[in-house]
Amino acid sequence: MGADMTAESPEVPESSISDEEWARFQLESEGPARPAAPKEPSARARMVTERLRRADEEAARRQGRLTRWARRGKPVEARPDGWREWPGRPPTVKPRSRARGFVWAGVVVVLVLLAMNPQRVLAWVT
Image (cartoon, rainbow, N blue to C red; front, side):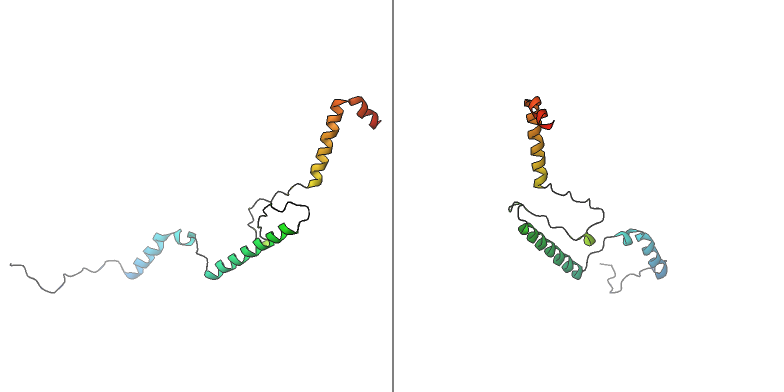
């Protein structure tokens, strides 16, 4: 066994790149990836978000119970205040009122009566 087993490790050649050049290379190679990477919200920000979400849900629950003529089983969507809402979110469609439904029902009744007996309906008008 002619191999020479010594405790010495083979020599590692020194890098030809200086530490400053290596640091500059790392920064340049990251490019726009580092600033564009999403930031994880802090624990405080997550707690505030959760507290605001719960407040919105509670307000929606109270709003759903306070309406006098609305159906009680209808779920109410929790919406944040306007200043906390995402700017690109489309505005919500206002639900139609019951009065509007009664007006349309009256219009339909008048049209049916007009179709069935036009002379009598026109006699009421003139």
